[in-house]
Image 1: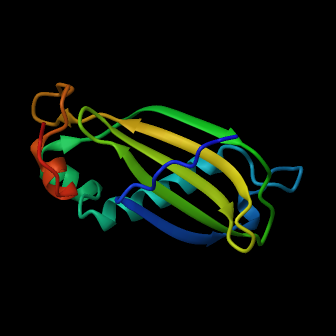
Image 2: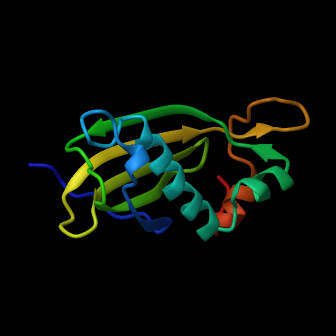
Image 3: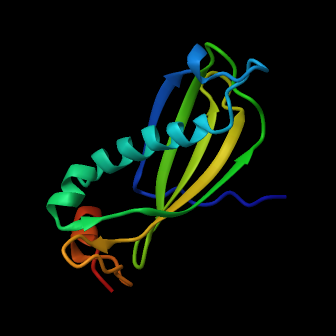
Length: 144
């Protein structure tokens, strides 16, 4: 039996409808399009904490994705309404976001995923081994 984890206080949910152009020849969402769905959820989350990509750049940091994991449970189909949820689960040394893609009507899980991003100082191109203070400010937490 799987234990339910506590929800992060930093999360966002959005709904989308599967479009025809996202389908593969088998008439289900092509697996690569889930990456696009994660980006939609991630952007909503970053907007919610006031640290979207433009704000990251303005703060002097870029946050490239260095790792991405996806696990598919069921296919999405044309016209289906999807709920995309993103939540920050790690932030001290990297930014790890967990995702859930589910059917908006039934709640049935279709996909779980996670991404890991690291801060890179734009001026020097150096990767930061500790998240910069601006992230802690945006999250409203004390730096370690």
